[in-house]
Length: 367
Figure (tube, one colour):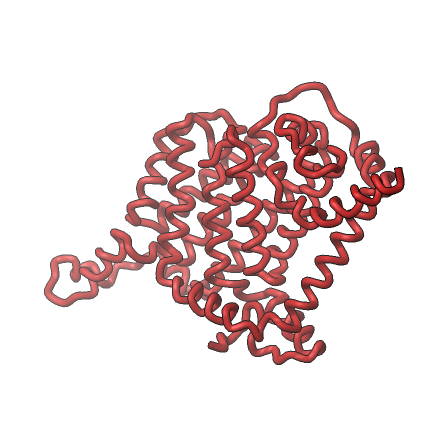
């Protein structure tokens, strides 16, 4: 009996950190149906925390994450591969607008043709509006106006379908990111812009027309603020899903564990699976939200989404495209302004004996 418990503890400890990235971390509402009510929140948490194995797994996972974090702070910047990766990711900045347009426009087009409103959980058809906005975004035509229209459309829908539409709150990050960054390249807007600024062209007659970009610049809104806007709403989305879909509604999440036989992947209780998935999403969300190890957190979010893609065969993949794009965008931009990556993290690096000039997201690139 003792040896069996020890074996379970060892296996559980090894997968403790990885649990948060397993397929149960999907939008639970997309792969389950309303059914019998599950355990209450207090009952659920009691079931998790009263099991010594679960507590041991959580402690082991916390220790593992702490050691990995300290190791990264101390040695991460001394790895040449890390420097090359950061430099390469930053070189993708000219294509950031294109990435955001694709990540927002494609699922919006799918929502229009699929007959739902942003989220598959909201069965309201707004085909013409969503397809029109999506087409403009994908083509890169009147991009900022299209993003503004999409933002307003989402907010109107949120007012009438609250809180269900919060399942797709990543659209806020997408629309705001596009609004600030602009169309990027390639895009129809960039082509028109080059015609306008070239002397002798017909389009040069419209050179003095005020654009959305001019208005934003007048209010002091620059492209550098885009990572902050993306972080706020993407981080909120991860944290919100982790808490509300897993911890506050464990019955639906337990259905996912049973449906895909996730306890066969690791010998842990279904309740522990749900708790760990929620914890993983919450931690990733808070890291992104506060701009702490932003690229690493975005990478972890990308892994969560990838395991969902391959682990849940009936999950609506198109509904997650925006999340894929936004995590990819943060891999490119890093944290942006108002982030712990620019304040606390460099201080921690300095205190444990390494120069802060190569921080996870340095204010001044040290390439």
